[in-house]
Length: 343
Figure 1: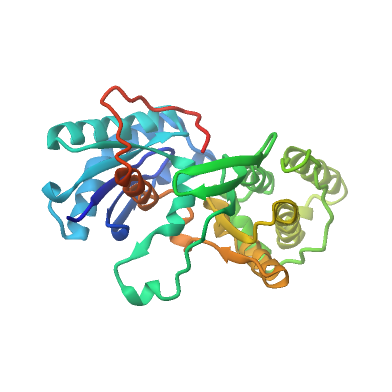
Figure 2: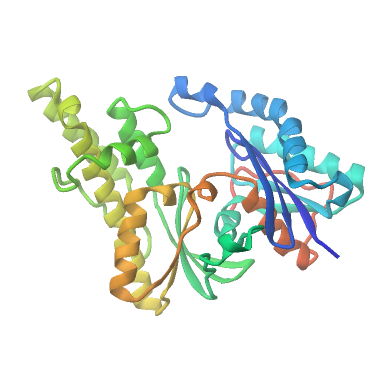
């Protein structure tokens, strides 16, 4: 009997739905919210209102694209957290109602776990799967996003241990906040990445904040970058305009170095050579290139999701729901969303 999971993702500003059958992706639909760009960041109240507007149409499209009927769905998986509480409430409420009406299991999903488990998603087209490798257990995953930067040892599909994390800002926050100072559009990370391609990564040297053992820190880098620009702008009001590409390249190089150095440390101390990236920042071209180069040097087996599965999406929720379904790990109708959760 086929196991067909409907996944719902509504943790931030993207309303997403996806269908996974027996571990294979059948459809993945995302409705983003352009309204936040003019504010330079996500406005929680606007996000939750947009989710209410988008969720039914998004689910409808996902079901039709998968070429299934709603009666074919075995269970519905939804993001319980972490995320914006108002946004999570929309997805949770929809999932509860759908499960209750259809008399099917309800599966809560940890958003952070889902970013990692998307590595195990399979494509319908077998030709696409030929070049797709999945990590063996245990493996080390660097989870990098706008709100989280963590080093996680993954021992099984649903068994994960956080061994290191940022003690202040996440890597994605450092990208976005520094981008904002330079006048780049939101989200800042992709804008920095694009400009860095034409810049010199060694043009400027920025601080690499220290943190104990496997932990990370980015707040000091952000402050150093801010003061550096302040001082240079006093000398030349057009400094950012003249050197924007070099600034982006140097900033990106610094952040990537911080992340890579910690992964090398963990790998050396644990002996784990299966290394994975996950989360929105894993789409960064500089990060991917640096890890590929290091993997060649150190004989790592490296695993990185396709770019379309790095940012928030429901395919990762559905595949996590699939593995939880296999273990009969279901939630009750009394489940509530959580703004903060650990993997």
